[in-house]
Amino acid sequence: MHSIDLFVQNYFAHIRTAGVTEAMYLVSKVFDVSLASIAVTILIVVFIYYARGRKYANLFAGSMLFGAIIAYVLKIFFNVPRPSDAVFASFGQSFPSYHAVIVTIFFCMLIFIFDEYFEGFWRQFFNFACVFGIVLVSFSRLYLGVHWFSDVLGGIFLGLLISYIFVIIFKKLNHFKLKSSINVPQL
Image (cartoon, rainbow, N blue to C red; front, side, top):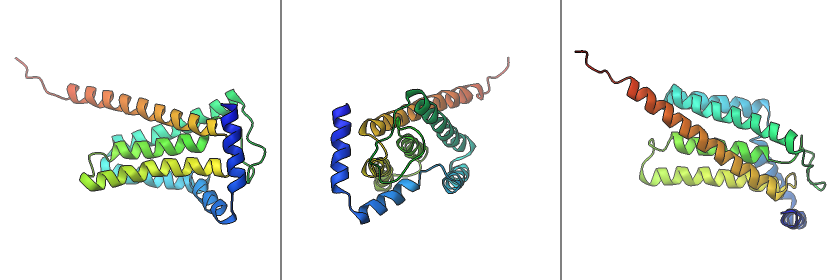
């Protein structure tokens, strides 16, 4: 994997342009750990609460928080240094990509939460936009040279895994609650 990481890193180092670099920086900035991104996440939780209910808002918030914590713990555990030729200095270690983890959870949860909300073309459009968001933010981290290719792939995989686990637990809990809320007539 190291040779692929170096190849991708060198490729982006040779094709960078000022305009695309600025655009990728802005794309990447949206999912940074900052007061603005935390505020936007809280606003989305509130929107989900009003659009889909408390249980979906809790699912979104819980999965995002868990993903952020796990990403930082794994960064400390693996202790992989960042590429040395990045466009700008970035906080922390490299593996897994925090941005890739968080953006994957963010958009996977939105796809799950609003799956029944949209129909036909709008469902396809929404799902495509979410997948495009994952690809775009992950690509921005590679383009800016702040992550290795393996960091981004690992981050996407981890984000998918966390999303899957949270959805399975969510479905199991809600199935259990549905069964337990059915009234059995007393004889």
